[in-house]
Image 1 (tube, protein in one colour):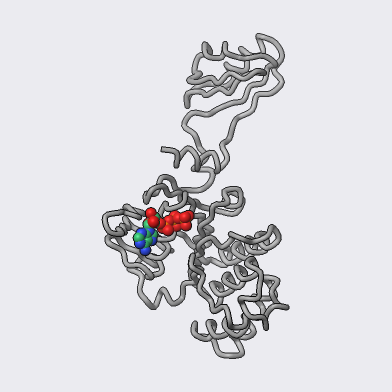
Image 2: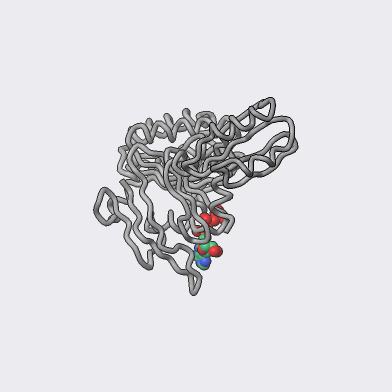
Amino acid sequence: MLELEELVRDFGDHRAVDQVSFRVSRGRLTGFVGGNGAGKTTTMRMIMGVLATNRGEIRWDGAPVTAADRRDFGYMPEERGLYPKQTVLGQLVYLARLRGQGNAEARRHTLELLERLGLAEKSQSRLESLSLGNQQRVQIAAALLGSPKLLVLDEPFSGLDPHAVDTMAELLREYAAAGIPVLFSSHQLDLVERLCDDLVIMASGHVVGKGTADELRHRDRPRYHLVTGAPAGWARDVPGVTDVEELPDGARVELAADADPGELLTQALGRGAVHAFTPLVPSIADVYREMTSA
Ligand SMILES: Nc1ncnc2c1ncn2[C@@H]1O[C@H](COP(=O)(O)OP(=O)(O)OP(=O)(O)O)[C@@H](O)[C@H]1O
């Protein structure tokens, strides 16, 4: 398990990362989200030791992370960083050998990954001759070489077409299922919602939310969508109702945590037809907007 405890990173007098703490657990896919400049890349660079921390601690399996640990971490940096003029296969095999694989094993594993990522036919092409999306797939392959014990991926899905997104998502799930903690950043909240076990939400250098998607979606005050065919302002007078947003055909109604939604429904039925009465569960995009809008 990877643990970050109260990490701080300053650039001059700007605090880019402020008291950031979270965990990336074994077998869990953890999505790392936040607006531009929120501090995700800086945090990932500190995990990988590319940037020093000003304060705080990074632990791997309970002990302060070491350079040896980091050699076993698969990393896809924001700045990417493969060689444009080298062939895909050539440089991936080279990287696999740097990670300790023998030549035959490095070749076999690299070819397997290229096949999996739909790049087998491009193995002898120079990286710069590939489309941007295919270059991105090669960068992903580079992070997966060797047998990484942890994956730290900075926006691995950006620039991928929908099929490549699905392949990549499936691959990350397999790594997580094999017990490898996976941390990836993304601005694609629908994808994060679909894929992740855990989420960490950052804003202005701070963690503003973390937990499973269900935990983050949980609201202390449940909300319901009531459709009656006419504005339902009367709901304001129902015991337990704390907020009403009137709609042309009903209302969105917020209740106190201990209120009985049956009371609202009974009163609605007493006034005529009820076409729908449904709990409103926020999407992760809603949660994200609420948490980062301050
Ligand atoms: N090397 C640096 N020197 C000075 N400031 C930096 C440096 N790297 C990052 N920053 C600043 O730190 C803050 C956090 O940047 P970071 O790249 O970590 O954000 P991010 O969440 O990854 O954003 P994005 O989603 O846009 O990639 C920003 O204000 C950025 O300008």
